[in-house]
Length: 426
Ligand code: OOG
Ligand code: NI
Image (tube, rainbow, N blue to C red):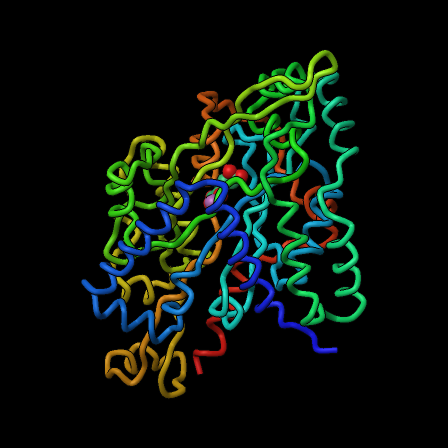
């Protein structure tokens, strides 16, 4: 039996998800076309960028690059999803607590973790788990728990393949087609709700997100996100392509040296759904959840750089513009230890690195940020839930509880960037 590489399965799955979502949400297809045009223009206008991306291997992944997002209802669902994603080399990295921003979930990102895997296909899924304990109404909480405990988000076929892959140290090459097709079912959109119109209305009243998670058969993919090299150009061009963007781009302002992540999205579709009813065949209604997003990725910041970013971001939220404190210069970001770089060239002792770079014996390449930002994620959630309320949930983050549900520890993104950059220092 020949075992498939997790990278190959992930690439196949990512392409299948993209095709499914394009068929389900035509505006997403339009967005992909726009992003392809903008990226081609950005590469043509900046040969140095094109060169650097060719050297780092990033150029190969750019056109296929996507992330998606799902929202889960229970600990058991999260544990199952972890096992399914593990087959494709996607592991849970980072903890995002969105409760302070008024979204009753906590999240992680399942993603490939080493450089070769990221370059082969960087597909990631931002995965949120509903925090039912944050629903105030005890009766509604109980009802939600009951509804969720009755649903099964994976087909028996994919369950069997996951178990076999776990027992045999990977998935057989001849099973990858079935695995991808069956797993796709978990993320498919269903326009028929599983709850009555009355229950839906109550859930909606508690929080739009709660209604989205609980009222349907499974965790439909709620957006997919291509990567662009010029998010401002995409944002500006969206209306001319018949797409209505959210008001503002999330993340750091535009810079000569992009850092972390900037994101924008188009507003969620208002879709026809039907609710089962004891009295009649079904009741017609509408639901808003699915949208499209774009992202522009920049250099990953070190612990020190990230602390500075978080500080200036907090100041920004108080109306103080301090983003200029984060230097917009590759050499300064590097020399002050604020961002991650990998070094190509002759092996060089760390204390000689700057001299070697100056002499062009060594080239320093920015390491791309592969993760997410909690404040931006909350902004994306809010704009697509169409919910003006932004009241923070009080209560501590519960990373331990999330890990217990997951059944393993979350990986620390900084450790992964350390591992990517360590071998290259020579
Ligand atoms: C997830 C929103 C967050 C991102 O890219 O930060 C997100 C969701 O709406 O479920 O996708
Ligand atoms: Ni997203």
